[in-house]
Image (cartoon, rainbow, N blue to C red):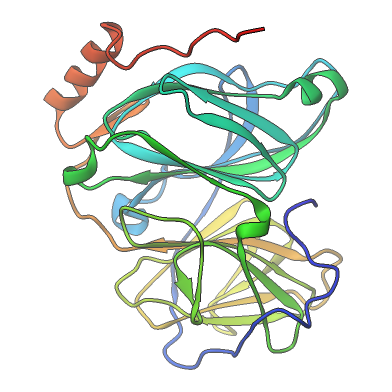
Length: 315
């Protein structure tokens, strides 16, 4: 797994186990298998069974793959528009190229994150690189859709390219749990991502039998999504989870995750939460606004070419 994984963790900052009221499990859902873009496989844990109140300010989470492509078979998402929210693409394995109508984008590789604020609207694509098309290989990652508050839905589009070496890394005291912090603050450590809405986004790897207890902002929602492996959320009285399941947690001050002691592989989990926006959400495909009339406007603007088009390659 090329996601940032140091060969030794002793030099990393250590975050002591938090104490306090453990956030209980309120709901568990299993991701639905589907296909996106030109037909690449995804598992989508939410939306679906979850009410927006459990996930606000997040709109959708997709786990892309893992899928091992043969040469010439890699797939992506050709040109499509967005308005009113942010897409956060965290790649664990493989390569992907983003291009957009504002001239932004670039190549991300295992361990990298591309944070795109669609804001007022753009057209972009997410496609395999020439190398992935030529050689094939493993592709695995996640894409998170983060809502924007009403005041920022018309913000100018922008990108944040966060390379793997920029992630904030820390470990638990026992040294058997590694946390890669992409955005937000945990245990006095701050991630590099800049957000319109306060959130936490992290990828944690727990070795078999590992225990992780982190202070979690009381005003934030809290979600744990299992990328692979098996374990438990919310301590001894909590809930067992396996690959493809997500737990929405209730009120409390501490997020607790434990890997099964008899597991044969690490417990890989995505930890995410944020301060709810609590505004009306009206969505249609790639547009997320506050009212139906704003959605109609977005469709009209896209069809009229006001979101631009991705320029042809030169050379």
